[in-house]
Image 1: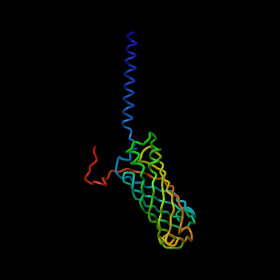
Image 2: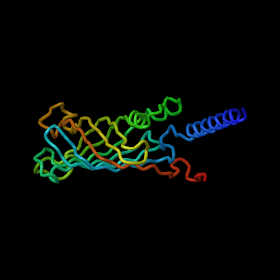
Image 3: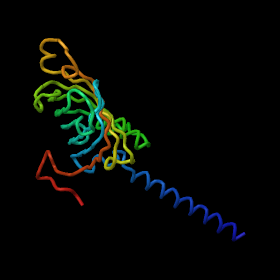
Image 4: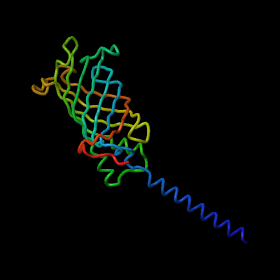
Length: 215
């Protein structure tokens, strides 16, 4: 029964090899999905902003440290798409915080579903200044406050790549905040911005510029 003995040896050898491949694949899987390949990520996007009084074309730029906290700047222009909307143009800039990623990753709460993890960890809060241009007025002539939240959906199972972004909230003018009176969408307006963006992770050693990447 030599052939049977050799067959058993071959099966055992194949099974051991398969287990080693499986274990290696599991060990190589990055639960951060590439988010800690660098310390800074940049997102650049374009899309459409839907507000209380109409729609505007939108552009979005964001920079984040460890995918957790960062800054953003947005520009919306109704004239670009020929929309009759008030305000015609809006510029906003501020800070955003996304607290879930580091907590979930360090606690081992990441799942085997890369897109799900990336989407959940992208949820964050935003606060910043907004400058609006009412119809017939000068550019950025009305200052105010913007507060919102966002979630982003990856098209690939990795941090670097194309994403669909959704950011929304409420904007108030300084006059509305001071007096409590609202005379139109320039004083208070809800908004939702949908953009198609590219996210890129970089290593720039923000904390310690003396660090060097290990190769």
